[in-house]
Amino acid sequence: MLKNQIESLINNQVHSKLLDVEKTYAQKHELLDEDATVETISLPFDVIERCHKETEELLAEETASFLTKPVHYLKEHANEFMYVTSERLDVIRVDSFALEFDGAFGVYSALFGLRLQKKYSAFLHSYFTAHLQHKQMTYSAVFSGEDGLWEVNLALDALDGFSAQQPFDEVLAQLYCLVFGLLEELEASV
Image (cartoon, rainbow, N blue to C red):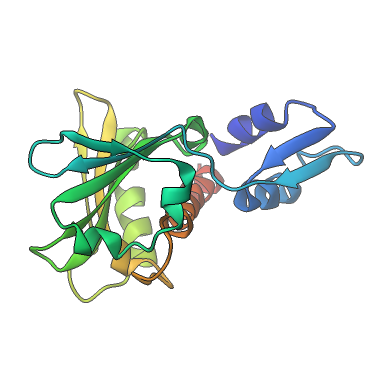
């Protein structure tokens, strides 16, 4: 699962570019050569879009500098959601992330598709229950047989250390780490 993905990122290169969580994993599983140099990078995004919640109409394509804005931007622009995608999300089997402020529940939400077999339902639910804590809604995960993925909606407020003052790039990195951790625990259990 993760091991193959990280190995393909490293691909026996002397100089690799990894996220912190990937580097830690590679070291833990001794995937790096002794002479390997690893550059720690931030999560790169190929697409950053602001869209209208009701119509899904594209409002604007953004640059990486938009990701330095605090997440509370979504509450101030409650009719918008932010959509991001990256080739790097393939490592964690996620298609994309959409972030929004859910006025009905009063929480910030992340929506994403997770390519994981249906047979891991109990594991998925137990992982999210253990790692997401919030007095209101924490998450929902429904398997779509048509798409072959889990449609996940989780409250960002339930992420450990989340603050609406955090910039988008930090929150997206937290989401990446959450899903990476899920896959790492799953890999260790099978």
